[in-house]
Image (cartoon, rainbow, N blue to C red):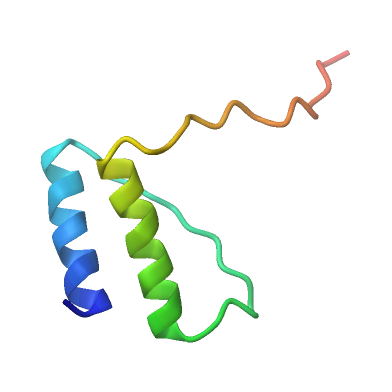
Length: 65
């Protein structure tokens, strides 16, 4: 299965679970479009398989004065 088809299948599976928005950040040196699509598919696959942890933040925000 190519990266585009894999992404579409994963998107459908996530939508069934109620996921409506997933954001990615890529640097300019991130590689080819195919490599980026494969990396994104790997992340989405991990989400579906429960192999992720919730990000709790960096604790770098100061409380308002």
